Structures are given as C-alpha cells and as structure tokens.
Image (cartoon, rainbow, N blue to C red; front, side, top):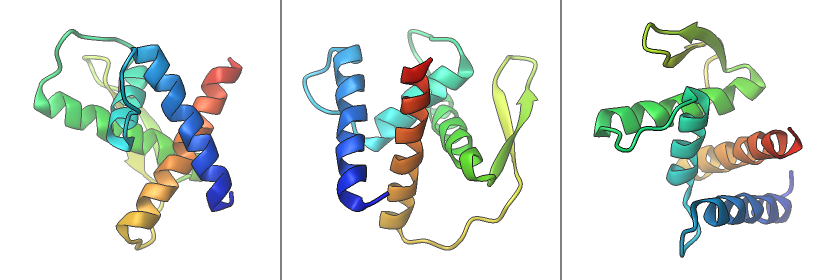
Length: 116
C-alpha cells in the first residue's frame, strides 16, 4: 500500500472510531490498539487497570501481526483472555516502520469488521 493510500485509509479508520466513540478529536494508534484489544477480548468493563490496558494493547498487536504469520492464536485462558504465540521473528525496524505496519494491519482489521 502506498503512503498516500495508507494515510487515507488510516484517516477513515480514525473517523469511524471517533464517530462511534463520540469523541471530539481523532484517536491515535494507541487508542485504536486498545479498542481492537477490547474487541478481541469480547467484553467491556467500566474500568480497566493499567496492566489490563497494556494487556489489551498487546492482544491487539499480536492479533494484527497474525495477518502475516508472526503470531498465531493459542487459545483463551480460564478468564477468557486471548493468548497468542510468536511463530516468526519480527524483522528489525525503526519506530516509524513499526507504526506504519500496525496502521496497515489496523486498516485491514477494520475493513474486515466493516464487511461483516
């Protein structure tokens, strides 16, 4: 995906989330990862602890990286939290490349979600 196309698709995802959450500003990548984590968890709590928020973002990153086979779903624990296992080693990347990769996968995730 070319940079301009990713920027356009990413803005679309941000607008979807902004409207759904009735927020004033566009969400950043961390917010979108948090929401993907909640979606993958399959339940909402009024409050998540700091550790749970980090876990939700980790779930989202693993879920997104599963698109290219870096992770695979390993199952759920006794509390229903999803777990992934790393299958492939991630290539060394700078922060900008990592963010671009996650945005690309998040766009794909939301396209699938919209088509359901």
